[in-house]
Length: 113
Image (cartoon, rainbow, N blue to C red):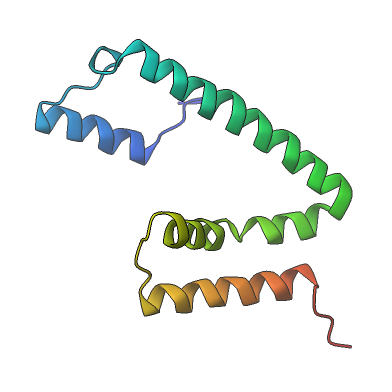
């Protein structure tokens, strides 16, 4: 359908809710909890990310900003390891290293002339 978006993760959550019997509705979450989630995800993260991304494009250019944006999984993994004591496997480190090298090459941080 035109204008319709399909979310695989959303579909899986609905399927899990149906199979587990946990339910899939706001009635299973307290009002205070979902209002906090709405404020953090919708306003702080949503608007903040949009404004900061626009600022980065103006300051750095679209190509460099896009390349640096690919470091998101690297940053998330490092933060999870440091603050949540998550373990990081060797293959994950290898993949993150390759992503980082790709970002460095794509962003032109190291010029080979």
